[in-house]
Amino acid sequence: MTGPLKLPPGPAYGATNQLLRYSFRPIEFLEECAARYGETFTLRLAGFGTLVQLTRPDDIRDVFKGDSTILHAGEGNALLSSVVGASSVLVLDEKPHVRQRKAMLPPLKGDRMRTFFDAMQGEALTVAEQWSGAGFVRADKAMQTITLRVILRASLGLQPGPEFDQMQHTMARLLMHVRHPLALVMWNLFPLDRYENSRVLPFYRMRRKFDSMLFENFARQRAMDPDDRPECLLKDLMVATYDDGSTMTDNELRDAIVTVLAAGHDTTALALAWAFELILAQPDVVSRIEAELDEVAGGALPSIEQIPQLIYLDAVVRESLRVRNVIPFIVRVLKEDFSVGGFAYPSNVVLCPSIHLLHMREDLYPEPLRFRPDRFLERKFAPHEWIPFGGGNRACLGQAFAVYEMKVVLATLFASLRMERKPGAVSRPVRRGISIGPSDGALLRVVERRRNNS
Ligand code: HEM
Image 1: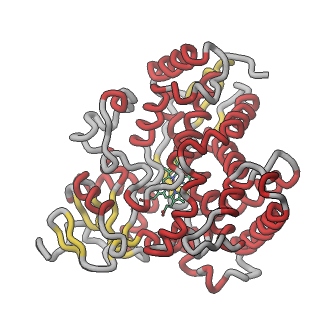
Image 2: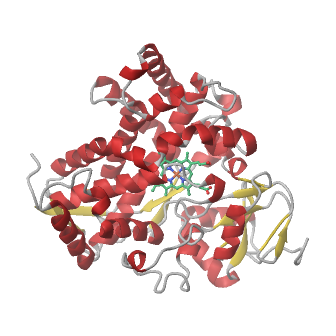
Image 3: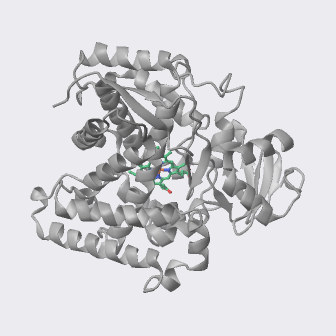
């Protein structure tokens, strides 16, 4: 093993104090530590261990390429199993992770996303019709409604109706618990394996209610001729086979579907809310989005064929995911000693490629605080230089879905409406469960309608 044995520098005060600072001012805390301790620093967060923040692209590349039997992401996400279940790809490592990831990959592949275009555009149009212009609205709430309805339609093939409404309502209530600032502490105190059947804890009661609705849905879809099942992730997952030829049990299907619902809904909604916050602050960016939409779609709503032609909008989405990340860093728990960036780390240390601090590097992104989509038209960034979706063997399975949904929703709303931010509004990054969202919800208002969609 090479390099000094001591860990990189970091705050000397206690782990509880560090956890509180991270909990209440996550981004400011990370930035202050980077300014004080340099490119690589060590945090101690009570209940979460020793976390080394990595911000150098080469170190992040080495972690992404590292041996997955040594670098465990699933163990780092273990607390999430209360929501997503013990067989979720998010919380597994090594062979069980590979097995589950292989089954989930094909239905989430890039070209498959086009199947969900109608759901994405339809839900965005519903919001466009509801935004009247009378007052300011929270973009985050509206985006949560869109992304929840889209992911329910995409994962279960639900059509608008009573079952859809009930699932939406129950899932929204379940996710309220997930977003609670103390959610992680609660799951730590009351883990799934011991409290799953609790009648007292509201989270587990809600979880059981949602599960029984899911199992009913599975039974109905299993009873159908496969050709008659609605186009959705469930349809693909029901016929996906593992290497030994077996298919997913109902419990595995449950965990896969809830993983997609939980991992894919709030993240995309908050990323969209941040995108509005950034775009509407810059009239030149709004003008270029509108000009591109007019050129490509000629004043109509963009069609499924036209979405890939929106090159500037694609850069807008990428730049907004760079400037405002929903997940500030990712985690890899070391199972053995591991060396990177001149340090030799012992097992149990958690290595954390820092999404936020990497994206704020002046040498990679000159004037890093500036929202400038053109930088994504001027050069290509390597997979370890732009990492809103993490990387390596654990890269987000929903990246294609999320980027496509962001483009369809933004294209539909900017083609339909002219909007403005509340003058003087400030959106501070605040924690919502494990994600980071805008403190004011990214308040905006409709100024005029660009087209009548009816
Ligand atoms: C803007 C929206 C999203 C962001 C910013 C985001 C970000 C992330 C990040 C940072 C990770 C961890 C990667 C790592 O450890 O290297 C991740 C994992 C994951 N995401 Fe996403 N995600 C988004 C949307 C979605 C969507 C829409 C889905 C599903 C349709 C999804 C499903 C998953 C899954 C299943 C994993 C676990 C992959 C594994 O452990 O192998 N995500 N995501």
